[in-house]
Image (cartoon, rainbow, N blue to C red; front, side, top):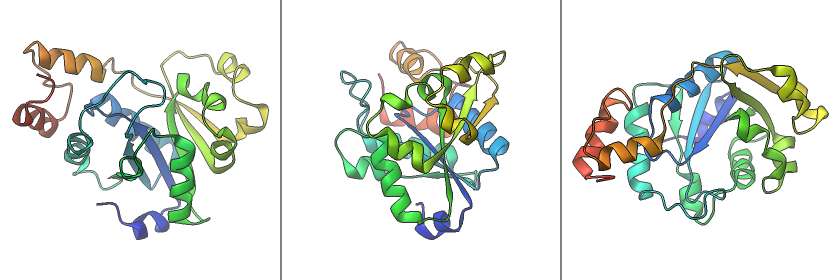
Length: 208
């Protein structure tokens, strides 16, 4: 369980949101490499309740997704899991989460939103983008060989460029969608997800 005192004591908190259905090594590698590059004290994995950008997709029960995340991150002290979006219910909006998190941690810690390049370029289209832009710095995962100049020219606004860090990460072509399909077809997901996650999927009969 994530303690409020741990978050308030952190200088830099990374917010890593997603469906995590299931969490896989691509998520974990991205989180660790961004954490190291930016110097984050805590990476807060926050599974959504419902995705605003995928209205037709119904994810697995939140209890399962939380359990898999906790199993995957248990051995890594800097990785924490929060159920704040699930407890809030409804559609999960990043701006609401940032408001709630700032209310918990106070004015001290820096909040770094961890996201991929495609998501970063769409932040200005999200709900209440002014809240996100005012409260967050951005740790943006870039694939090897990306063109910083081209992406920065398309970035949200010139005024936030100083708040962004673009970090080349190891590209792992793993997707939760593919993992679910593999399980449904009776194929192996070993080496795609941590062993505790694989065991949980089998034990609970998920995605079959």
